[in-house]
Length: 111
Ligand code: SF4
Image (cartoon, rainbow, N blue to C red):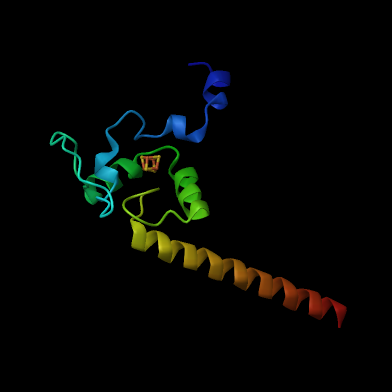
């Protein structure tokens, strides 16, 4: 693949999970009837996280999940739902701390 073609791809086209049966990434949805296909892989958090660890677009996938607040039912960007919520809180705290620091600096400069 040429560099130009590579760069023209969207991040999800370069995902390690692309083309995989993504059953290992998704917990069963209580509202959805269970698939009758017994060959469908079931949720396997460890295996999913191992795939994500080798994924070249993990950062993009994680940011996408955080943006969509898609915190239910599986692994996205290498984190499960609980870890995604914690990561979102951590990023919000960090952004809030940065805004507070900027405001303090502005006030000190103005004084
Ligand atoms: S980080 Fe994981 S879920 Fe996200 S695209 Fe990569 S392999 Fe798929």
